[in-house]
Image 1 (spheres, rainbow, N blue to C red):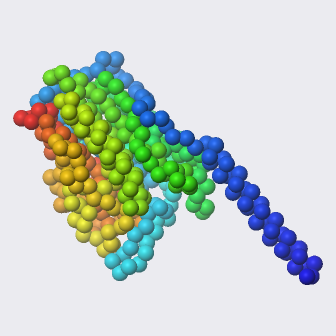
Image 2: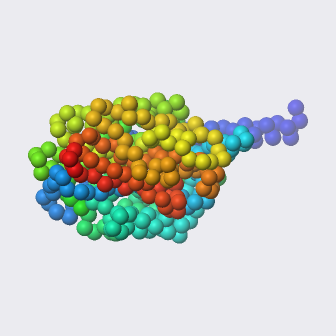
Length: 377
């Protein structure tokens, strides 16, 4: 064999061995920095008062749930993990893993704040605010602390925060690495809860999925009520990109078991958030020029415990809450469905409205809930 060929082969072998070594070191780094947050841990609370406030039976209150998508999702933004198909079968794949710029990140975050600040029918902020995908210190959001910006915008609210994504530096995708992520669920309320507890959802802990999936959870706030019970408010974000829906099924079983036990105690229960399930038969409700994507699963009231139902938005047929992120948003073209909303117990009255923001600041639209404890309103 000529010396030149031997030299080339030796060089290729050295490069391959170096790549394998680097990959091995990186996997060790990920393993060393991987951990799940323990179940039943206290959420981080920033309180405006030291005394829990009472939720009055029969009094009207409002709440909103809103996944702000870590401040990245302008209408033309697409996400690299989202895949879909046009009606003619053409495959579509998103592009980005990070916000396109710090300026865009701040514009979306401030837009989210402005939207929620005036989301009630009288132009005011709701009594309870449930946010998902709130970054605190992440490469993908240019280290903009969304939690601080939101908290500062609502100085009279008590806040409750729990992490559901905390990762080492993720070097994928190679053209635009996700980087390190610190993100979570942020709840705000004009009333002070007695306790706030983070509950860990089951997730896919197989290799390498566990490094790229969120440390999924739901957060439970307990407010005393005027009739001696509790309003149990849950902020939840269930799994996406769950092929076959097996993980989401386990998560649904967990939260259903929890709310059923609270209902049996005579408590009032509200679960708000991003369910990553099509709600109220909305899986193919809205016009689009795309096929229904694989990530969409349905959630029917029959899957919920006795005494619970999803509150169907009064404008469900007209306004979706989530868009596909494999192509830029275009109304009537991009696939949309409703995966955000509220599950409530039947010992209260409640109505909901999907807020039509045309996905200006996020790939989600907010959902507003109007409710009162007690079946007679």
